[in-house]
Image (tube, rainbow over the protein chains, first blue to last red):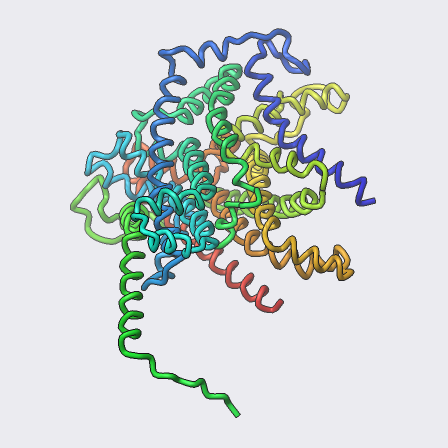
Length: 267
Length: 310
C-alpha cells in the first residue's frame, strides 16, 4: 500500500512545483491566447525582445539588481560569518542578548523597521540612493548568514588552525589555506541566501530607493499593473535566471553530506 | 554520602594563563561581532524604536513642534474597519500557510528520505524553487489559478465549467486562497530543505542501528527521527509564520484592495498623501511586530516544555 502511494504523492508534489513555471513560460511566448484555448494560438518572442532591449527598463533593472545583490551578498556574508564564528566558538558577555538581536530581524517584518528608519535615511541623504538600499537589504540578510555560519562553525575543529599557526603559518595563510576551505560550503549557502533575498526584495527597495533605484522587482511590479501578460511572463523568466544560475553552483552544499542549512534549524 | 570533588590547587601561573586566555577570547569575540552589532543596532533597533516614537506622534514629519506623546494613531488603527478585517485576513493567511506547509513539507521530506533510487533528483527538484523570488511565485500562481488561468481552461476542457465566471475566485479573493497558495509554493520546499538537511545528519546512523536491532519504522519515526528533526521544524515554522505574517509583495499581487493584509494596509497609510496617517502606519507596524514577537515567544515556550516532557 505504502509503496504505491509514495510515488503518487511525490509525483503530485513535483507537478505542483512545476505547474506555475509552465504557466509563466507559456504566457511569455504566447500571443492571442483567449480563454478556452489550452495552448496559445501563436507564438512570438515579443516579450523577450522588449525585455532584452538594451535601453529598456529590464536591462537597467538587471544591472542595478546585480550590483545591489552582489554588494549585499558579499557584505552580509563577510560580516555575518564573523558573528557566526563568535557565536559558535567563543563565550562572551551578553551572548544571549546578541543572539536575540541577530534573530529579531527574522521575526519583525522588514517593512515595519524600514518605515521607522526612513526619516533618518532622508535626514542623512541615504534615501533614493543605492547605498541606502544596500544598507536596508542588510537587515533581512545578515540574520540568515549568522545562523548558517554559526551552524557551520559549530562543527569546525579549531585544532586545525592551531596546528597551522604552531607550524609557523601567518594568520592570513591560516585563514586562506585552512579556515576558508573548511567553511566554504557555509559561505556559499550564505551568499546564495543573502543574494536571493536582496534580489527578490521589493518593498524595502521601494521605500528607501523611492523609485529612483529601479531594481528588477520594481520593474516587474510596474508590468503587473498593466495587462501585457507576455511581457510579465518574459520579465519573470529573466528575473529568475540569475538566482537559478547561483543555485546551480551552490546546490551541492544545501543538502549534501555537508548540509549547510542546519544552522537555520537552531532558533 | 556525597562525594566531594577533589580540589587540587591550581598553580598561580596557570590560573593567570586561563584568565588571560578568557580575556583574549572575549576580545576576539567582540571584534568578530562588532560589525553585525553596529549595523543591526543602528538600522534594525534604530528603525524599530523610531517607528514606535513616530507611532506616538513623536518626531512627526509634519510638525516638529508636536506636543508630545499621544495614542491617537492607535485609536485610529483599532477603530478602522480596514485594519480590523486586515488583521483577520493576516492571521488566517499566516496560520494556514504555516500549518499546511509544515505538514506537507514533513510528509514530503520523510517520503524523499525513504526513496532510494531517485533521492538526489528529488532533492534537486525540491531545491529548484528556493531561489525563485516571491514576486515571480505570485505571478506564477496568478497565471495558473486566475479565472482565465490554465487550471480554469483545464476545467472548461473537462466540462466542469462553461465560462470563466463559473470558475471559483482563487486569486485576488477575499479569503486569501491565492496568497496562501503562493506561500505554500515557496515555503514547502524551504521547509523540506531544512528537514532534509537535518535528516542527513548523525540521525541516519542512529536509525540504522535501531533498524538492525529490529525497531519498526513507526517506532523509529516516533522515538528517533521526529525528536531529532524537531528543532529544525520549530525554527522553520517560526521563520515561515513571521514571514507570511509580515510580508508585503505576495498579498499585494494576489490579494484584494479590501480586505488586505496588515502589511499592505500599513503601507497604504504610510504613502497616504495626508501625512497625518503616517503615525497610524507606524502604529500598525509596531502592533504587528509585537504580535509576531509574542506569538513566537509563547510558541517557543510551549514547544520547549513539550520537548522536555519527552
